Length: 184
Image (cartoon, rainbow, N blue to C red; front, side, top):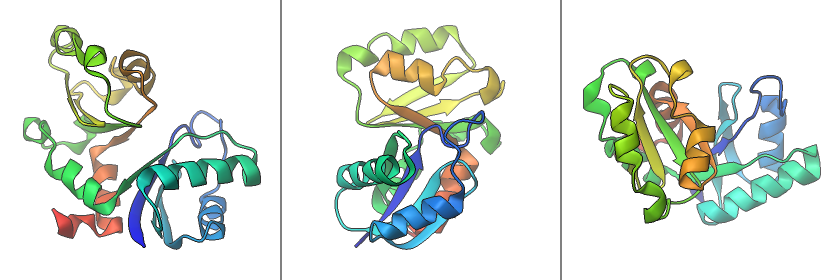
């Protein structure tokens, strides 16, 4: 079994896709996952599961449909991948306030043609910054995430990938919950 961090997109946001975390834990347990834990009320879970992140994403999404009649995109990373993405944050030196740092998780690396011009677009939005590394987009939003143009919807359209964002405090808390902090 491998430790996975699961991110559900759009759960308990704006009154949509209501999902008590007890129901999420039960769903994951019913799928045969072990050591299931959730963090906050916004669709974050850590568990041990067999299979690759892509296989776990598909199993959990199918479980949402079958058991809860919800269509929810699921993104997964292993604890090792999570530790690597924490260590790789190219913007962490810009701000010691975790409210200004975020990671948008993508369901895969964007194609090169989708990335072209993003740096130019971002320069217009300075002092906001974005750096895409593989399937992760690191954000620095000194004015706050509530006013950034780099929303998950914008990045989905721009990069052609499913996206969900977590603030840096949540990223680090999930690393701790998954034991990924010790892997850094």
